[in-house]
Amino acid sequence: DHPLNGPNRAENRRYPVGVGVRRITSDDRGEMEALKGFVSTVEIEHGHPLLSDAVRLLLDDPAAGDSVMAVVAEGPTSVAGCAILGVANGARVVEVVAPHEHDLAPRADLISDLLESAASITAPHERLIWWCRDHEPWADAVASRSGLIEDRRLLQMRIKLDETTVSHLRKAVVPTRPFTPTTDDTAWLELNNRAFAGHGEQGAWSSADLRRRMSASWFDPSGFLLHPIEGQPIAFCWTKIHPADSHGPAMGEIYVIAVDPDHAGRGLGRSLTCSGLVHLADIGLAYGMLYVDSTNSAAVALYQSIGMVTHHVDRAFLVPRSP
Image 1 (tube, one colour):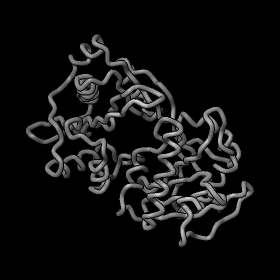
Image 2 (tube, rainbow, N blue to C red):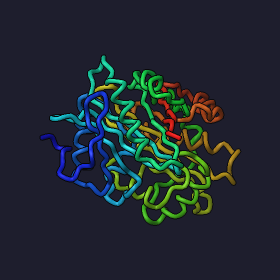
Image 3 (cartoon, one colour):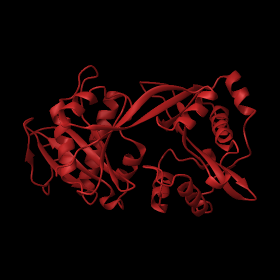
């Protein structure tokens, strides 16, 4: 019997692939912990993370409630894969983890069945978005099989933080101070939600969203840079460090960056980007990176102008719902 088989599991649903698919909710803490163990094992096999930060943090949060659910495909002795559902601004976000050899895709029918099962436990009014990473080149086969519609493209852009580049970036920095947990929470949330009004992932954050990230092992307030005017933050650049893995070197990420809309048009976006990258270089990182929506042409042009280039593209697919 494998770890994700439990006495209270839901009724299995049989698919042509010969596995049962069952639902796990955040209340099933033992099963959630076993699910996290499964994901960790697959990530170790592949040498890099497989889940987004938002979904991973929901998995870790016992108070997440219906904000996180999962469906698991399992056979008699092993787990074949799972789909984990988070939530972002009224939409469900689903991410799939399935073991496979690096040069072989997992079975498209298995992934399609996991997505179908994820759709079956999602409220009819909710959009369901499957985020597919660049290291999943088999996504097109799944999309074709399941009638998925490409919804968004997310560019990962990188820059090498060599001495010449950092010297150039340093000319554009602005004064910043580190974020102070508790003291700055309310002001930062108000700033973030004004700056990202209507944004699919970053908008409408609650104190719980901020708390989850501050509880993460990677959180470091010294890399959460606020640009204040008369003590009030009007822009920020939140950085994050990614350790080296088998697919690449250690990198510093500009995790979230924004300017209060009342102060837009003053070049602060460029200055805060440079400030964040210089901070990452000063603490020893040789590479910086960030994610940006491909349709945000102004931001893409800004990042290109300081020397960033697109490394890879992640895609989001809209999962069709039954009428």
